[in-house]
Length: 192
Image: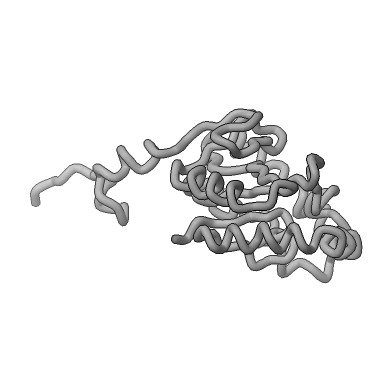
């Protein structure tokens, strides 16, 4: 019986050459305005990594939004093996415990809210926020722990701007997360 050496490519659904090129289109964006889009990495990150196509789409969205609404990119690709990925996993574990205590009736939302939601896959899974008349709008001021009635009140206050932003994201090929809390965090995935 002839021995054949193990090769990782047999286990992958993509060609070995794709492995070499799949992350070459990632852009690393630091805090500030980059290519017309405001970048504000979510703590503890120092930068946001996104696919080049995503940045192009965000530029198009910003150009079509009214002057009083500005798009803010907060989160993109975060490799699971990085120190940031490790920190996020630890925060998630703690967050799940707290969320279960505070919202026992919402345990069916844990995977949607605390899952990586593709952020560890590639740069097409992003979180955005927005500013209105020069001030950042925080739809979830306490993050995912923001009480549902506070969420509803914030949605009522910013309904028009939020609807415009969601519509612009969808027109540019993004899909907004189906979970209500994640959709207020404006987690979206580039699907076209």
